[in-house]
Amino acid sequence: MFHLLISNMNRLKSLLVAAGAVASIASANGQTSAPACVDLPSTVKEAINSDASTTAVFQNIFSRTSVRKFKQQPVEDANIEALLRAGMAAPTSDDLQPWHFVVLKDKKDIETYAASNKYHAEDIKKTPLFIFVCADTTRMAEGQGRELWVQDLSAVSENILLAANAMGLGACWTTIYPIQKKVVGISRTLKLPANLIPLNGIIIGYPDEPLQPKNKWDEKKITWGIPQ
Image 1 (spheres, rainbow, N blue to C red):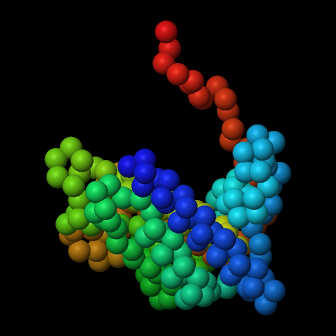
Image 2: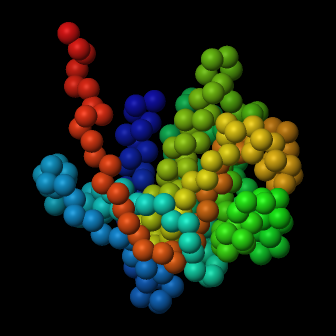
């Protein structure tokens, strides 16, 4: 799995550089805004040695933040495909690729989904794009490895979140699995076949709120070596 993560980092690096170029072009046309820029820690700057593409990757990782309020502006089809391609570039155990995506972008579909949620219906109606990241049970490992799909789809989801940020979009992971009430209810609303399990719903759009990345570094949460 480790070599897959390294390979994925290289693929993600290329995707983010390309996405950054797309975002720059779109920004020039007034379609989007660039992701927030953060002051990278000195140790990170030393590690990346001022390489432009590597700096762009780390800037994107550190500037990513959850966005829940969006402009009433649709996300372009080309951008949606770019997000899905980024998701499918994620590492996957034994290359099983146990993912399937349900995309809601039409107002009618989003209103149907909103009607099923009595707590957040109004916010859902204002969301331009949903990508539901689902597991396909026909492409899962057998035995104890079956639950590896959760790791695979988590990697998929993070790729989408990072790609969205690189493109000047805002996004937020909304939890579905393992809360069975949500799994059952949302599966029913989306009319998912029995072989699909929704892990999450990623809400996406052009941000309509200040971007406030958090510094989550905490050295107390690191153990170096095996305690004696």
